[in-house]
Image (tube, rainbow, N blue to C red; front, top):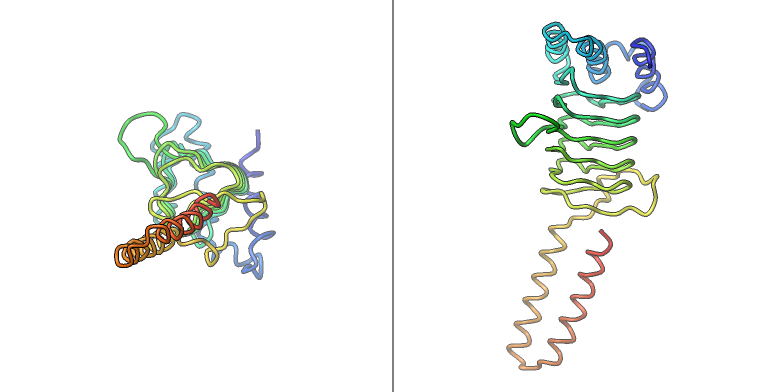
Length: 233
């Protein structure tokens, strides 16, 4: 079992290795509230596992006050998890987070009911949760998956996939190493609206001209284009 000191040391070194915005070790202690939040969690979680309840929740409350990151001490968080720009993040009691997960600001790993048992998400290794994303319920975000900014995820996301939108839709990725690029994510709603507008135009033209064969041909071509887009997701 990894000791508390070893876990905190790994969190510390993880930021030093991977954050290009870090210019000195000194900054880690004053400019990284997401890192502080993980440290508060590590301590409160160890105490919570020993059967204590009030002290871990009190430590968690102090961490929340200082960082605005709310992590329940009973949550399960793996190694080298980094909360970047740690503001407004909420991680529920039964949430499970794997190793090397990156979480941006304003993310919620929450529940959708007040029932007992597992009611928060499981985020597997190497996943990235974009800023403002809401991942809700007892669902699984697969290994190496990416959640787009401000997406609302209510269903499982397969490994090596990207989920975007409200509610989130799944886009299959070709490679495991694909990086999350918010400027390159498809606008699913826009594509659907374009399809509907073009389809209406085809129907209107066919009504005016009475050319059923032309309508069928253009409608078939339009359907092929739309099907290709859907199958790429």
